[in-house]
Length: 313
Image (cartoon, rainbow, N blue to C red):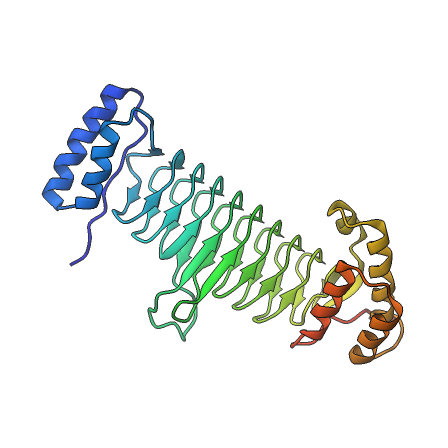
């Protein structure tokens, strides 16, 4: 039997209004046998604090777990298996469904679709997940899909900004402080490391990795891995230089930045192949956390890396 949603209104202006709502909602739940919701309503009778602010036209299914001070706007739909953390705001007409967990103080803007089934022919209705961290913003009409594969997950970290019409596909892992500009799209299984910036209208091929503090120019075509700390641009994308401003803003120490610059020159300007360049970096560049990460990324670049521009490019 299909479960019917509860139309929930928590945005009461006074205790009297709140008690009237509880009375009416209790009768509704008794008629519909929503025992779990009845228990929550009994708890609300003894608590004068507003639990959440839910517009009267929003649809919140009985199994959804809504944190304190959550705001849910007009005509939003919150699915049965959704969990929303404290202080998060859900805009009008947003749809959040599937086994989706959203952290604290996030903002989901109007028209966004979060946690829907993946656009993947292999998907067969299995139970899979979407996790979104704290303080992340998902702007208008963006789409974020849960994973393909039983028990698999799509994940977005903390403090990210997904601008309007961006798309994060199934099984993607997006780190912290990532920015995706308008209409940038990630295909399935893409990995985006912390503090990467992806320009608008960029398309990223499935299984590609985008490294830490990298910047991707607008309208780029990304078919190979983007090395950490670099700037890439083009169709297909090629390396244009180091993201010096991004590294400085991220607080990377100046000595580490110098070491990254040495590693970059050995990789892109020495004429060495990838394996030889890795060996030279290991020998000639002072070790630091950033250089070690640079090397780990190169060793695991299964699709190859975006190469530098030639003079005739």
